[in-house]
Amino acid sequence: MNTESAGLPAACRAAEASFHAFFTGESPAPGSFAGRLGAALSAIALDLDGAASANLFAPPDGASDPVDALNLLAAACTGFTFSRLLDKMLFDRLAALAPHGATPAAYESDSDAAFFYRHAVRLAELLKDLVPAYCALLADRSGEAPEGAVSRLRPSALKLESAQSVFLRMKPGAVALEVARMSSDDPFAHGRVFRHQDGAFVPLTLPSIRSADEFYGYASVRRMFQEHFRAFSEGRNNLPLLISSLPGLGKTQMSIAYSLSFPNITLIIPQPEDLTAGLEPLIAELAPWTGHKFMLFFDDIDAAKTDWYYFRTNIGGTFSLPENITVTIASNQRFPANISSRGRGCEFPMFDEIRCQEMILDFLSAKGMKAPSKNLVAVIASDYVSEFGQKQFEELSPRTLVRYLDHYLSDPAKRKTLMDESNSEVVQQPDPQVFYEENVKLMRSIHGEDALNEFREDAVHAK
Image 1 (tube, rainbow, N blue to C red):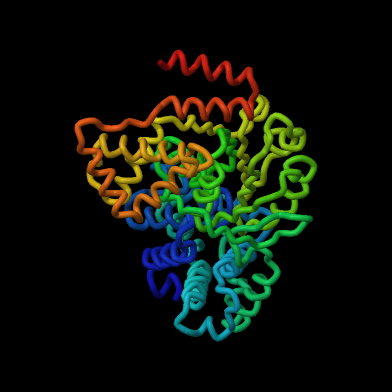
Image 2 (image 1 turned 45 degrees about the horizontal axis):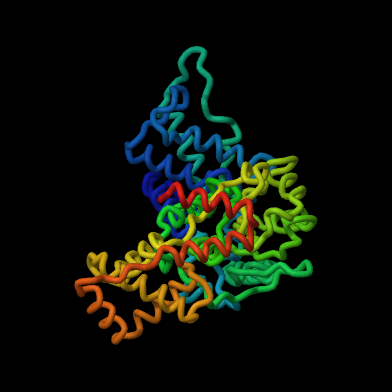
């Protein structure tokens, strides 16, 4: 298929459709070759459909200007040919999508491997002629240049064609073998989570991690996590996320769950010492794998005792993080001021009787109960505190409350008993003093007496 036989608008729509099928579920980084190619196809399609009007000499008309988009695409090709970068994009993407152990026969069968291969071929075929034909259309549309006018289209944009594409000259079996070779060379091709230990990346299984939609309460924190990792997934931001809270509030589980909720993010769990002297070589080792987005998750870091020199140097200091890498650090302490200024801060509010009931209400609503009564929520919270007093849980926290709620959901007799209690004349309320005393213990053990006195003063003012 080419632009002459199918017509330029139809060819552009077909190329855009294959591009989106090829990147299903992901948005390439805006500054990357793939991101700029997608933007150019969208802008050209809008122009050809009459939704915009591009001109080689007139100022841009609207936000999606094809001339600007083609100029940016040409800039992404500086030092390389368009066909070489297109081939690299196609092979890298096929390698990332390839099922483990896919054989050459799979590329000629009714399989996902064949599906992506067919779209890759169609995209490469259409792009042989699409951009030159569109540029010719622009020239015809603009007519003769006004006196003294200079074309807005950079000359290198006129060379954006893939006539020399290696990809198009290879048969399906050869493509399959090359993709298999690339996958075998890529240590991150067939896994989502890796532990970095002794200089090696070891695949890791995390069976106990809940999915992102199985967290309750703390709505503002969950929104921040969702927005933060979505921005990284879409290539809009790779700002570090610095999380602080008392133990048990969910910072570890939520960091992992929300990161993995985006299919193009690979989670790397380094050793704590990698945050110091090992940070620079770790970043250098991951940066070349531009087909992956890496979230480095440093958990349970002692913010007060960590040597932050290497973090300050590599993040917002002498160097900056590569676009395909971000860092999340979780700590039970607050971060020093000169560290918190280099990332996005997230501090979990303390777990008290109010947030306990918010979590329960959120849980009941998520499980299908319409408008759970305040009395029922209070009774469940009170029963949870009572079980804690009976030493059935080691702490009062979202971590143990989720375990309690799972048991509540699976025990019909318990549900009936608590429902009956919520309908009685006197409804038991959760004891706020129990939460206060437990938070005092945690504050003392982690932060010492100074922070404890500050916490007590805040509690008095709150009353």
